[in-house]
Amino acid sequence: MFLQPYFNESDQGAVISAEQASRFAKDVAQDFNPIHDPESKRFCVPGDLLFAMTLMKFGLSEQMEIQFQGMVGKETNLLFPDAFESSFELKDDKDKTYLSAQRSGETNTDAAVIERFIRHYVSFSGHNFTDVVLPLMKRHEVMVNPARPLVIYDSMGFEFDTLNLVAPKLELIDTQLDINGKRGDATLLFAIVDQGKPVGKGKKTLVLSGLRPLCNDAIEQMCQEYALRQQQLS
Image (cartoon, rainbow, N blue to C red; front, side, top):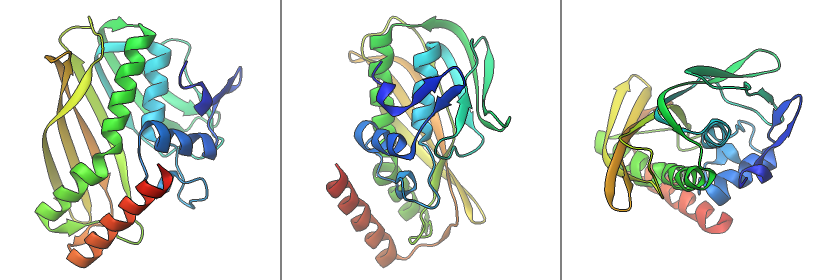
């Protein structure tokens, strides 16, 4: 399983080290958010890694919804259930919930198809900041704190018209930003395409914290710093 280098699993649960989480973010998801750096004081495991582990363990269903309810720190002992019928909650050994998921319809358990979908899905996610969040902030003339930019997952979901899949990919359709005080909810709508044919659709919601009026110099500096990180860490 291609995810094996990114977590350790035993009878007691699954544990993700800061280094494993950081490697997944940068090597697989192409996500260079500083919050996934091992030395970050605000370190958290990428939500995409939790999503990927869920799909590899339980398969890809026709309809799936995932809500993120907390940020997973390093070395947290995660307890995945033995089975995933219509819903489950991912908790740690202290009964704290980090993720809840619902699904319905048929399920595809072809590991090769699931891996291809995961790789494209998380790579699509890794470009959210530069390709989606920054343009949205500029359009709405707001920005996150440039010194401590915080953009995290709220939820994601998708539905397939068919599970007879080969290499499903995501194509961005539309974006929107709903602002409530210093919080912004960025929604990404996407189509799922396989071998040039539409096979489904979905959406993802990100939370932007600490919003403030746009400062062009500050946001351009943020863009340059992110691009430099990407160049140095790729």
